[in-house]
Image 1 (spheres, one colour):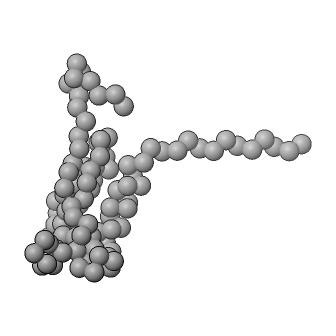
Image 2 (image 1 turned 45 degrees about the horizontal axis):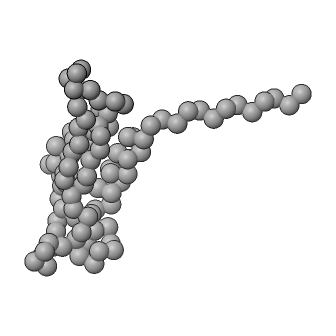
Length: 100
């Protein structure tokens, strides 16, 4: 869509959001629902890496310290579901002509 300052519209970009746990993280559920229900320009999860700059464990990271192993499969699944939900709905494929 084309956003217009004349119509009081502006794109929304959510940058650097993340969570380290599922239990008690109501905002995680709410922010995912917000992004799924509204047309937004995009988002960025923070962080992907599994360790902080000082070599300590990064609990918010999608990956563990080995940079290969997924830390929290539920988090990756939630983000994959979000990506799918934000895709434009593809038009139904045309029906094949009936053979006579």
